[in-house]
Length: 267
Image (cartoon, rainbow, N blue to C red; front, top):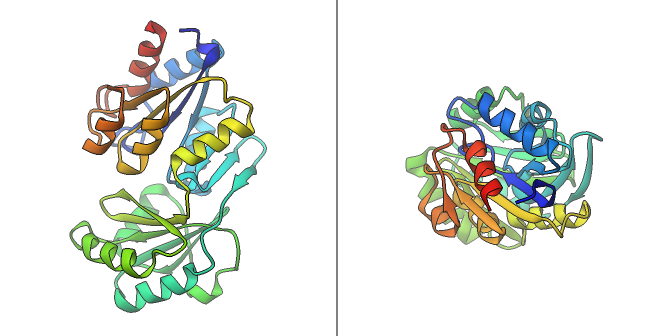
């Protein structure tokens, strides 16, 4: 297949990034070659701006990316939002109820370029340290109104079912809720997903005519993988993503983009 008619969008953690959060040299070379031959390559991640930027800068993305699990399309070259969708105004009240019932919870409010942390725990501290991001520790009422692109709930994996059940029962109106990792549950705007963000990106950048490829590993990637012309799951992916995919390749530690690009070339 001619790469000039192809756009690849990939998840980061567990897909493009290996277990050490790196992109292999082989994958970087394959991506560079793909783009040099006219292909478009970008990312769709649950990460917000500050956590996605180091990877976006390393990849030198020529087109915008989908961030905040689909709540925004962002151009890292112009440092500007092309599109964004905000969580419901009820989110502040939802967070207060969650903290009241689960005082040991960790919570992030991802607000455009800033991460606010109105409730902290070990899971949240490890997350911030791993991504080398400093959140603004503050009271929930000190977070500015507007610009809330998603809310992330950080909780130990063994306790996650209980807090998910509470959120699904009491914080459901006006939200789309996704499990983005065994210890992360997210509140997104209604109707928002990575698949929706991918669609918005194609429309905004005039790329709706391209052959679409989407790669992922976790349930929040499944709809995006299913909706692409070629859906790809890595071997380490959740079963839901594997069922949604057209092909399954090696793990995130086995140069996944190289294998995807080689497959596209053979079509």
